[in-house]
Every structure is written in C-alpha cells, then in structure tokens.
Length: 447
Image (cartoon, rainbow, N blue to C red; front, side, top):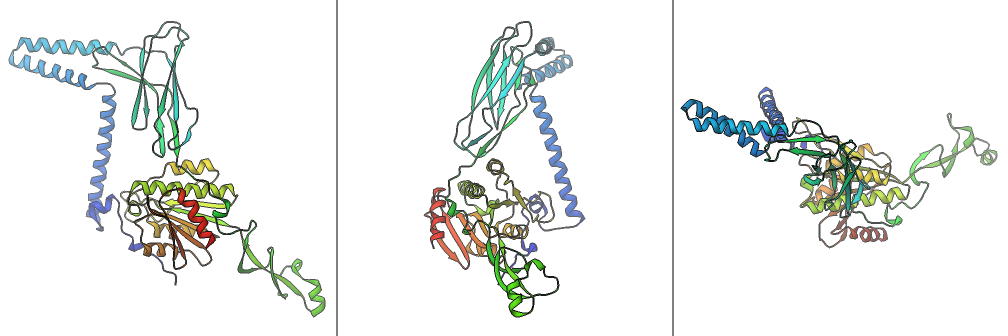
C-alpha cells in the first residue's frame, strides 16, 4: 500500500516559525514585519560601517575622537592645552588625507590557471602589478580577498613599463565555491590614520569540487540494456513485440500482419510492449536534520557526484535533485526540489560545490515526494541522506515512487561498517567511506 506524506504535516522551521510559531493573522504578520525591517536596517548599518572602515582605520577613529573631545573640552573649560592638542590632532588628520589625493595609474591583473579543482588539490593564483605610466610610481600594498581570508602583498616602486608578480595559494581543504578578489590597492598615510582602496581586477570564482570515485558501469544502475527495458504497458508501436490481436478502428495499417490475416480471414495487427530507456534519479537531502555531522553530508555529496558522473559517462539519462529551502519569512513550507545541471561532468560538480545544508530544507521523505512527481519514467532512484534518517522515514520516502522503480537508499554514516539490508522493497546501503560505495553497489547487484 502506497503511503503519502501530507504537506500540512511538515513543520515550518524557518525564521518566521521561530518568531511567531504557527500563529497567523495581522498581529503575527506585524511582528514578522518589524523583525524583517530591523534586519534590513541592521544590514544597511553594517554595510555603511564596512565602507567607512575601509577609509578610516581604528587609529584614525581614535584620533578623530581625540580631536572632537579636546576642542570641546578646551573651549568649554578654557583649557588652552586641550585646544592646542585638538587642533594638532585635526591637522594630523588633514595631512593624512593629502596622502590619499590623486590617482596611481597601475594596471593590476588577477589570473587563475584553472577555476576547477578537487578538494585537497593545490590551487595557485597570480596577481600582476604593471606600471603603464611614463614616470616611476611608488610602491603600493595589494590586497586580495580569498573567501573569508585576505592575501596581502607589497609591490615595490616600479619604473615605466616594469611589472611585479606574486603567487598565492588558495586553501582547498573544504568543498565549496571560493570567491577570489576583486584585487584592490591600498594607499595609506605613514601614521596609519586613513587609507584609500582602489578596486582593479574583477573577482573570480574557484570551484572546489567534491571528491568522487570511479564506479564500474555495471554498478551505475541495474538495468543492463542500452535501448530500453520492456515493461508491462502495451502500445501500438515500439520495438518489443508482444502478441497479435484483431484489427480495431484507429490502428495503424503499417502494423497489420498480413500472413496471419491471410490465415484467419480477418485483419490482425501487431501489439508491442512499451520500452523505457534507463532513467537514473539521484536525490540528495540538504536538511540539517538528516545528518549527524558535517562529515556525513560531505560523504553524501561525494557519493552523489560519483553516481551522476558515472551515469553521464555511460550516456544514461540522469536527473540530480536536491532539497529546496523554504524562505526565512514564508508562511508555508516550500515543496520544491532544486534540479542540478547534468549537461556535463563539470557543470554537475560545479553545482555540487555550492550545495549546503539548511535547517528549513526539505527532509528526505518530502524530497522524494517532489522528485517522484517531477521525474517521469524513472527506472532507478538513489536517495542519499545521513545516519539520522530512520527506517520508517526511508520507507516513507520509497513509497512515493510507483511500482517498477528500483529505489536504493544510501545512508552515509562516517566511519561505519558498510552494510546492505532490505526494508520491504527498498535496498538500504550504509557506507562509512566513499570507497565503500563501489563495493556496496557491486554487492547489491550480485544479490
């Protein structure tokens, strides 16, 4: 018996649920609106603070405070020394601002030998500073934002036509999309009160792909044919012959079997079994609740990439989907799945490099429900999740697929002993390391 998951049974776990719970109405909407407005104001203030912080250093803010306090106290209390100190501090700020005037005509470029690497691989980048002017230009400090970090270089003074290059290495210890740049040059006064940033080269994205493993072709799916597997659905035209039957109005004349017609004295037509080409579906849960640790999720992402890449190498039809995330202030759970690109190996791994878990993302049973509705003609479905998903939830997820679809759940449990078990018509593979995927699929195929 096929069970369904009611959409009203799924609890909302976004920011709105944390603020007002399940309450609805004008008051709840007003409270949520106030919180959203406060968040927007906070982001605006933070952006403005970062912009000012890029010009005035902490020492510069301190000097500005000394200037204001000294002048106010000096003129209010008649304290001559404080007035002098205030004007000296103000003069120092004015002199510092003169160092930022003008424009330095550097040409700054940023290059990456490749914008795609596998996690753990070396990813070098190069920044080049060239002097296109006719006069000698002074040295400048170069800053390159790399992800959440910052790479800094000191470019020396360059004569006309000279250039200076520096190489930096991007850390790739974790899968993800690492933004690099934009490259900026920084000019500052000798004391360090003010600084001026000038942006030169555009930012680049480095795709750190998940590690994948080569899976033998026989382990990709368990449908061995290349042209299609015959089903029990009958059709008037296909390649798998089923039987002969009497002619009925609407049948195509090209399907008439003339020898049988001559024997029986009535028109007989061929009937075929509908064939389906092997369609592989890979569904990756992005719900935080479906994974016990971050390592389990990384293992699931690597397994997803391995299955998808192998299917594309075998020229099979493959769909890769991941849980969609409900917006933070939505009133209802968003029942949708994000379809990852399967145009090529690189595009799929690019998309997998950017996936992350989310508290409000669909859990595995709901993801399976959405995926089964959108992927017609699926012959085999792989469901990937972590160790926190129960056997009941796995059965509920598999129940959304129609009869005839081979459903395989791959449970990623970091360091666990690989196992294979059957839960009703569902195959459950537990893997502790990525290398277990190959052996577990081969074992499942053998049984």
